[in-house]
Length: 119
Length: 155
Image (tube, rainbow over the protein chains, first blue to last red):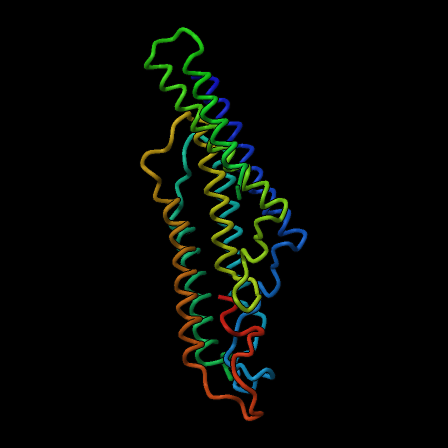
């Protein structure tokens, strides 16, 4: 039974590492495009292509990306430090993540329905 | 035969089951348990590996994994991808370290995946509402929805 557990661990490592590596490789080489990741749609009646929307850099997306990377990195570090149990997520971290998402969604809703703030 | 690799994987798993079932001198109940466990592991690994190889070779195209219909990358999809990998790696490390599957699933895992999946869902809703309520064509008289960028991208 011991060898079965070892074999399962290696199989899991190969598969998980493989999927992670392939996705990472494609992200780095442009096989999976990240273009316009930080650009959002804005309602624009005078858009050049006549679609009614144009794209512009979005601060909401940038802060969401930063918070997401921070939370993901923090969580992973905790697991690596103590791989015997899942880490407890502090309320402040959950609140920050939720707040960041609300900010992003609120900004997106505003720019899609009413255009850029202040215009 | 369209996918002979899958058939060969199944045959290999059955072969492993038979070898373990007729090998050794343990009691029959343990033999059955071991045979089924090894067969399941072999089958799961080979199926996973075939999919992995197909993705790596481009037979399964994942170039639009993060893209929306307009071609831009989606922040909420990217976020879901990151959390999926983080949670997946955490599960793997914890199962390997403790030798058992965590029970119950911790609330932190559900929270992380729930927040990012909800964001994706709400974002799609906002996108659909925004597109549905967009105004009349601009004064230049061009047609709406030319399919080049604003028909559902960037959720």
